[in-house]
Amino acid sequence: DAGVIQSPRHEVTEMGQEVTLRCKPISGHNSLFWYRQTMMRGLELLIYFNNNVPIDDSGMPEDRFSAKMPNASFSTLKIQPSEPRDSAVYFCASSQDLNQPQHFGDGTRLSIL
Amino acid sequence: QKEVEQDPGPLSVPEGAIVSLNCTYSNSAFQYFMWYRQYSRKGPELLMYTYSSGNKEDGRFTAQVDKSSKYISLFIRDSQPSDSATYLCAMIDSNYQLIWGAGTKLIIKP
Image 1 (cartoon, each protein chain N blue to C red):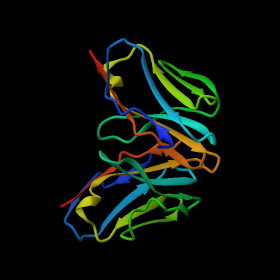
Image 2 (cartoon, rainbow over the protein chains, first blue to last red):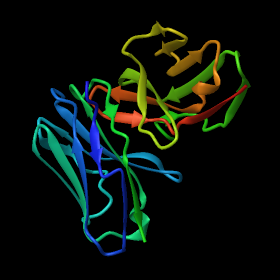
Image 3 (cartoon, one colour):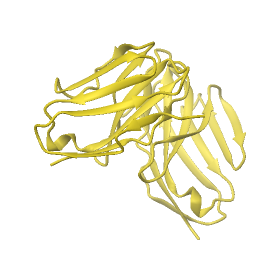
């Protein structure tokens, strides 16, 4: 079975550029989560969706961050404009429902120069 | 005080030893408990999922939940160098809020 698929795996871009991260959840999963992981702060939940609807975006650090889920098989996390402090590994995860365990993709390693 | 406390380690043990990893929590509303393993440059991988007090075993791994003490553990028997990774605990409360531990870095020495 295909797991959670994220793209790109690596992204290096200059400060001020727009960055779009993509995620395809596991088929049949109703909940989707975006995380950011750094050495300093560990794993941080940014936003999550249930049945394509954003439920809680209180973890989104600033208005520069936005996320969409136009359908059950695709989600994007966008940063515009990007800043060096946004450099981190961004993970997408999905689960069958909100109280079920999450399954993670391999992440996007983002470097903002 | 954090809702979930987990010693970041590193925890270094010799190959073949029994490993004990632990998390404590303060919110009695947590109902679901999970352990994840994360290798370098990979996403967290689900190891164990449980929603009741007691023990759950899967191969060399045993998850233990003590809701009265607000304490969960993951035991690894016959530890192998390939078990070297960061282990994260995670919990879900009755409002479906998921809280993560900081992760414990485990090193198994051959």
